Length: 360
Ligand SMILES: *[C@@H]1O[C@H](CO)[C@@H](O)[C@H](O)[C@H]1NC(C)=O
Ligand SMILES: *[C@@H]1O[C@H](CO)[C@@H](O)[C@H](O)[C@H]1NC(C)=O
Ligand SMILES: *[C@@H]1O[C@H](CO)[C@@H](O)[C@H](O)[C@H]1NC(C)=O
Image 1 (cartoon, rainbow, N blue to C red):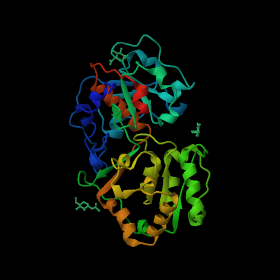
Image 2 (cartoon, rainbow, N blue to C red):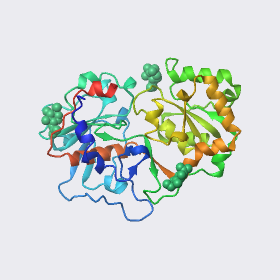
Image 3 (cartoon, rainbow, N blue to C red):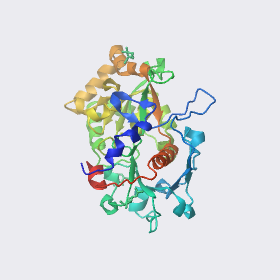
């Protein structure tokens, strides 16, 4: 492939970030998990005491200011400083640039000349459908930070951690996971007739009024989508949750899936292929719309599961062996970007074919 910085992504660089989150089928959740059970902060073994790396956040995503995290306190990452003070541009080892704010009128790229040795990190958590004008930004970036596994710095929206690898209590299934009053919930932030998920929803409800009548109508603000607690509390009442992505792309599996998992519902997914989901979750942990020839078959299966303790068990028992990590927006993103810059200091990285890669 023409994506040269991929070489880094699959070498020691990635490995270093994967201390803990060796999830299903080798998918690496590239995070340090703070050791919550002890008072001592978690100390990565590869910590060094050389000069602190400075990451400049050029623009907070969508212009919404986020408190600058202390990466040591929050994640046990040492030697990394994050700032959003643009007057420090010339001193910054790396600049984190959020695509949607650059492409679409939020702000401009940092000024030229670029300070020598400085890395520009492409930062994007939208799907390709919602990340326009990538072609304009070819040949300027040094590293990529996105949800895609083959990014230089890959940060999925969430990931499962095998309990065998960490000293953690399993997150289910609990009694309330096994007994649920309602059948199916769906919460959608952007209802658009052009989305595959809306077409699918309409098909599904046409066959089974029970799905329709249990679908919950509620108006939520942006805050609720970011935080998720309100949605998760809602999901706890339901057996299934429709985790339908707004568009279908490689690795584009968002908080919709992880909210379902948090809420103890079985996610019914529409997004990338089943195979792609299986890099994040055990095969029986979700129901894929592609598993069924028609929406009617899917609806029939959901009703069958509802009345079958053994099928419910089948879809939930995997929970005994895992715990869940949800990426913290944007603490994990800022700190991981900073650690990447620290790790690649003094080396040259060039992102080629950004457009071609991200659309693939
Ligand atoms: C909602 O979806 C439409 C169609 O894909 C898209 O054009 C629009 O930008 C989306 N709105 C938001 C707020 O994401
Ligand atoms: C959980 O892990 C154990 C030990 O690896 C394994 O024997 C068991 O089958 C797993 N259970 C489920 C439900 O995946
Ligand atoms: C960063 O990328 C630019 C543009 O491709 C390149 O000229 C520069 O050498 C790279 N710098 C580093 C430090 O990787």
